[in-house]
Length: 409
Image 1: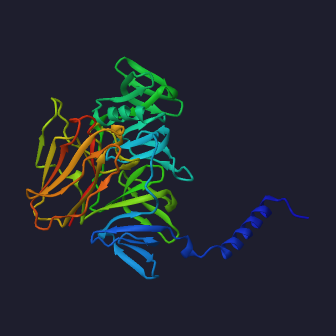
Image 2: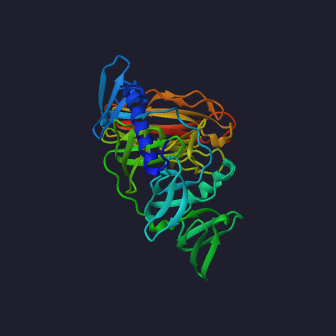
Image 3: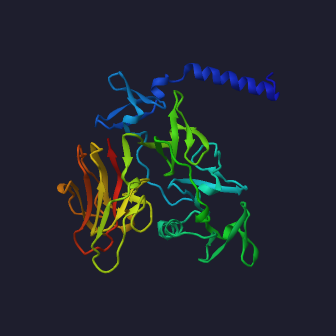
């Protein structure tokens, strides 16, 4: 007769696990397929053995083991690029976004459940690193776009609740739970039911973010979230871990990751550099300055369903010049009309190096695929010029994106 004692059941379960482990698929068959893009343009595909702090180790199709220094990596793709629907984003002051559910607030941090993690572990970003939190998941992008624009383009002098009825309430946030938000306003304390709140924006003047290390990795997840990490690794058991730039050490299965973009001594995001000069030739009277890491309307950079953490948003009639000082070997980017244009728009992207034209795209619309430029040689170059030109229909819906523009030494 089989015992029903709980301890006996646990022992039988453990024995079964040991049997399965002894007969499971060899480790090499479990290793995720990855595509590596390197600074020397020698892209490789193979099975990931590990990503250490100093190198990526991959078994390629020939069976040889390839070791690539992390400083020579541009990107590592583990899964197809994802198309992310509107989500309840946590927006950090460095541009990171994470799909998460608000649990509560302490004196020092927001506590949230990390949605993509199988165990929904707790995120605890310090309050000073948080820009805003979407509380109620928007039903469509038509709602998300103005909401994000409101939260990212505006400077909030106080903590502010954006309510579902379109109104707002400002003051000092004293507590937040899954039941209610409490603020101390100019007329006294106020409590607002959780269900009435669409988003929370924190006081912009109190924002403070840790200075990143020289080398960082932007990790994109299968739900469309991304987090900037320092000392990011994936071990032999395909467990990923690293210190998020906001200060918390996180671990997650590699199966939750779609892509890793590397920045460091050799790879620089162009959006981290201020242009020397910007020239605007508006079609009518309205002027749109270039925007770093957002499209020109303030939304996320998005081309044909894929969101990009880094890049530049422009509109037609815009020229931006960047000083290079002969420090770089090449420039690379992906261009297109943002999905925000709803299939409309018509622009031409062009690139000059030291005043000489080196690249011009065909006319691109919001319906045409994004275009990855060739690597633009920059050895000895002093100036890079990016230009978005008018095509058809003036500047109507010309929401032009330079996605992941990088300078490589």
